[in-house]
Image 1 (cartoon, rainbow, N blue to C red):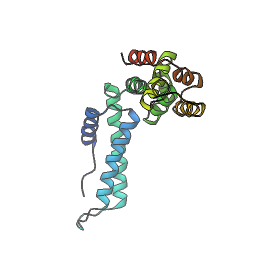
Image 2 (cartoon, helix red, strand yellow; image 1 turned 120 degrees about the vertical axis):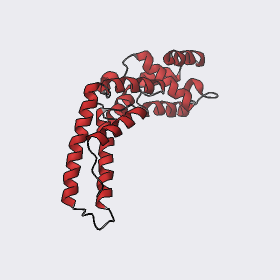
Image 3 (tube, rainbow, N blue to C red; image 1 turned 45 degrees about the vertical axis):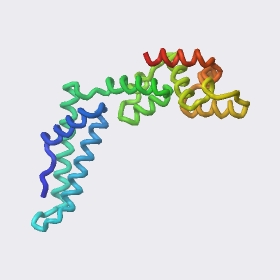
Image 4 (cartoon, rainbow, N blue to C red; image 1 turned 135 degrees about the vertical axis):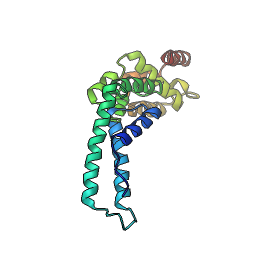
Length: 193
């Protein structure tokens, strides 16, 4: 039977993941959990008849590996290599520049394992940033000040719906859609600085 992942193997796997990706504490636990699950499937499906793939032994090894994963994550959090707050701030800035609303940012952070109170705190509160994010989405979708030609009332209602589904408040959406194209570009450029 293949030996189960121990502290050292899980620590190496965690460091390899952190070298490539910014992550949260919960997400790092999921990554290590998937590694343990892959080991358990491989150990249970070992074709060598000399190896006794005892389900109870595999379950005990999985439990031990999960405890080791918790220790590894706790050690990396204590060392500062994993920080939910730093991840939330960085990811929130990136999502604002991509044209996401405060609500969408908070939801995306919670989905990545950031606690909900920390996710709400990381989402920017300024109205200018929210307007600039709505304008970024409008430019990407070519609506509002970035559309070609005039919009009839039906088209304008559809554009409002696009921004509403993205999580923007109605007043922000109306301001974004009614803005002058030059001013809209200036606000987007100010957001990216």
